[in-house]
Image (tube, rainbow, N blue to C red):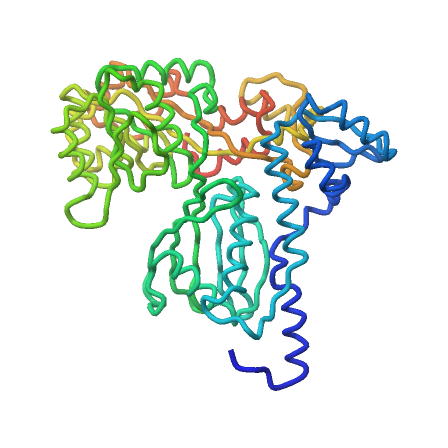
Length: 505
């Protein structure tokens, strides 16, 4: 980079050099602020504890129950009143790692005038942004180029939040560095590109998928962050109601048939599919998956990645799999009519087939198959059920408190058939970054194909008519399930009612 020609520009560079790596926003202006640093860092690490939030002069502290006596003794020694909340050592370790990252960032400065493509300052900048995003449980990281700034945003629990604004002149260097990591063409800046790489954050490996597109001010790059250690989720933890879980369990334990899981990108379909697969897979069955990409490697299951090229798509791989004597097949996504037709035929010839499909609801997913010109009588014979889902944010369990429902909330609860008088919401703490929410759970709509509904499919009725019959057959609406989760204290009523948006039920 050329040297600055004026003292004013040099001074501006010095300021930016001090601030460039301060890539994290402070916690929201609330009683959460400074709670995470209220206890000496080294002592907090020794005792496996962390300040979560303030309640007046009382510090709410998270710690494993077996360390409570030690934490109380230490709090007494420094004259601090505390209230203890049970946490696991792993949760505290992760939160302390985030605190350590914050401290490291605050102490870091670089010489902006020396930044060149591939040099350490840009590499360190990108790595620290990724580290912070992973520790905050972000699923995606956006680098957006505008006329005056590069805005960096992270998607946490389904919501984008700003991390930092960087000087616009750094956009080419940031783009080039990410492209080098992801083995993309650094010269090409007009056409969309995709790539991937892996990095390490603490003791975990993070797989990163990179995507670039050209905008009017430069390139926008989005990184999808995938924690390879993500634990498996059993069926009982997915978010289904008791009746839904019974219905779904019967569906996936059938000896053959087609089961669709529907929802938009990022709605948790892969988690649902793998949870179902692990619930029915045994050593006596040959289980094969076809995925793009293989996100979770599962021991004992044959997993096939869909590679680039004309001869390795879902349909081609599915035909090959049918010659491998399978009992259960998971097709990662039904994208075209050919794949859908082969899946239906496989289900009709004695195989249990799971697949995902993009649709707004369960009935819409079923009609996607009909729109692919697959004969209605074949669909009616093959399909066992359709699951539609959306992710909603869960109340942070570290700061959830009960409150009396408002008059409007009582009206809403009554509309959905619930008589609860109190609800639960998170008030904000270190663990949730002040949002009151931590992690997400799925709200489901399950369409069980009865004999009556199968006969109706053959007649190819209008979607609204079929939806009405499905509701009469005890299919619940997704927003009803969201309200149920709110009544059970798992989420808030406001969050549950977001499911009504674009929901045709």
